Amino acid sequence: MRKYCEECGREVETKVITEKETYDVCGEPIEVDAQILVCAECREQFYCEELDNATLIRAYNEYRIRHKLLLPEEIKKIREQYGLSQRSFGRLLNWGDKTICRYENGSIQDKAHNSLLLFLREPENMRTYLTENEIVLNEKQKAKLLNTVDKLEQDLEYRTGRRLFDMFFSRIPSEENGFKGFDYEKLCAMVLFFANKSTGLLKTKLMKLLNYSDMVFYKENGISISGLRYAHLPYGPVPDNFDMILGRMAADHIAHIDVVYEGAYEKHQVVPECDVPEGVLSDPEQEMLDRIYEKFKSFGSVEISDYSHKEKGYNATKTGQIISYAYAKYIQLN
Ligand SMILES: [Zn+2]
Image (cartoon, rainbow, N blue to C red; front, side):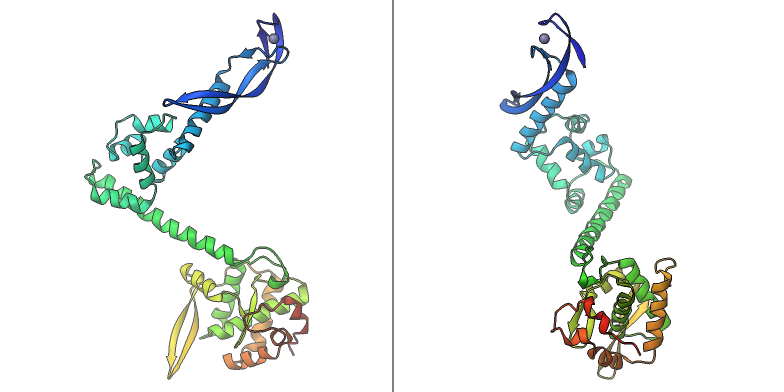
């Protein structure tokens, strides 16, 4: 940007430099890095509204951080998560009509106001606030707000669950997952295929069917289907953290486990809740599942367990250890 410099007496090139400046915020000196527009030749300072405003905002934010105050955008976010206008949010809090507007636009908020906003950031606190205070909102507005609080709470639970889930199932390909990041969608399709095809499929048999599908597919293609890791347990190779996966499948209405009693025995049956989704599995993956199904269709849970105990990968590992896909090459389906 070229500007006329009084000092140089002509139009000059300008540049932006950074300097320490001290601002007075609520009676407190706050030092910030200020960006200043100067003459590139004599360094005479020019007034620039945008840069000045930016510096002032930085000073205010520095003050807020020092005093643990919410930032204007955070205040706005709290209001918006409840779907409220500035006016109705102000009314709900018994503040003046313009107060929220001023805070969102950068005025430093009162300490007590800040505490209330922080408290109301949590949906469950908003519920408490709504039930324990005399609220200026009418019944319809109040019902709508409570409904939003419900949704936020469920959403929070949902997101926490998903985060935990992602922590357990690596998306980084390695020899432990058959060089494929865990693919929940494909796994659901596999479970639905086996559960829809067989009547009264037991969980123990399903685990073996998944293991053989993944391992043999890996043996022939160098990659697994689901990206599951399999662990050595006393009754054979099983998908790592399988109960957690089944929990999510039940929550997603993909499939769930029914416990049936047969005399003294407890049987865990896999109940599908929908059809196999189309287009999730590739043709070669689908053919593999067909082959595995045909091979083991007459096997009971015990027989297939015994069968899997003979596998080299199982014998070379100890209880709790992950069975590497490297052992897949020894599997023979005769
Ligand atoms: Zn100059």
